[in-house]
Length: 115
Image 1: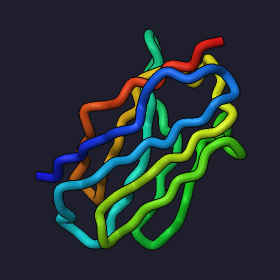
Image 2 (image 1 turned 135 degrees about the horizontal axis):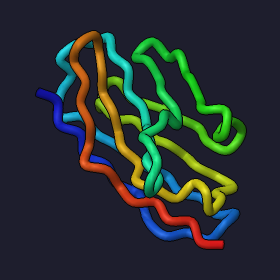
Image 3 (image 1 turned 90 degrees about the horizontal axis):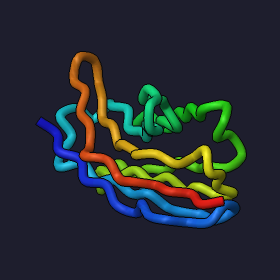
Image 4 (image 1 turned 90 degrees about the vertical axis):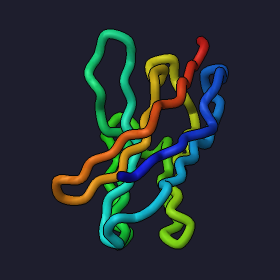
């Protein structure tokens, strides 16, 4: 079991920035993928950015150029720097850890972008 604890959400005006952080309680496997997903009201959960333990990164098209994902494998942390935020970025942001059939989620942190 991997527990994920997120922090850094909040209320920000359009054009502002937020930095989300997530720490995993442990790594079941050294090789894994950590990332961020979000769910807006009435919508399905979608990927924002993911990063493998090897350093491969994938960004959602809607977030490219506005977000940067980073991780520290030794500290089991992943961070998401979000800039130029838009009202449509509002939602609950979830940290994710996965490898193979193992898939864990954090409790989510609310991000609200006001216009």
